[in-house]
Image (cartoon, chains in turn orange, yellow):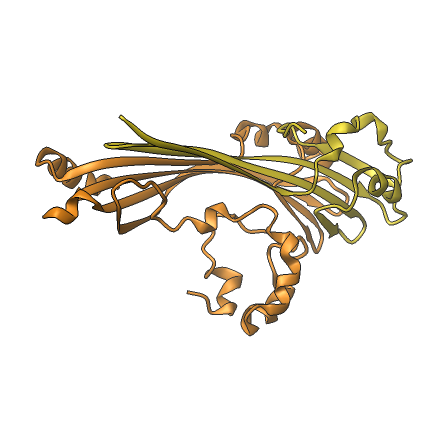
Length: 201
Length: 106
């Protein structure tokens, strides 16, 4: 995004940028990241529940369990460009760029429920960019931020597993969303790590 | 200057009935899985932790609004989550529970 700022400033100065749009999506409240370091080795998972409430995600592990708390804020900026001729009165070209501010906390417990390790991190990442030609009065997202905005209730769609592509269905027993095989950040790409077995792009 | 505006919203998950039930009504070592099911209905997720079983309840609400101007458009959306979690031992007796600090009004 920073690399494009000079170009956008030049386009604005020459009158070629016709309009702008700002899109925001807050997924959850900010996390108390400092809390992760306030727990001791003797802490029990009940202490974490009391302080932070139910986790965003949780999973059984072979020798315990894990809690994961997440929060994502998406910000997308759009810049409309004037098209030449009469078509420019009704149609605009739009360049869009999105950023994601992510907060995550992970707690790992042993089989007795005692805290084994905890950490909290926050970071910003480039969530993608896109280009579109659209009606002059419109404001919709032109970047692909699906992996950030997947519904927290997607696991309720377990019946859909029966009609998934064969490679995905075969990998179901290692599913990282089932709560039985581990966890992954919501912000992960769908084609990395365990999911590479599904040969997704 | 204003050309249009819009607002939208949706609710996902189960009805957050736990907000009508004080936490104190669930007693660790006494309350059973059947008691929780009767009060709150089926959970969003039922998680097997080998030595424990977890009932995980979730309600998610997304709301947003958009303002469409000639030179400036703005769309903002917010997703809120309301959660409750119950841990039971192998006998189906409540061991731990928690409600989320964040809550959605019923």
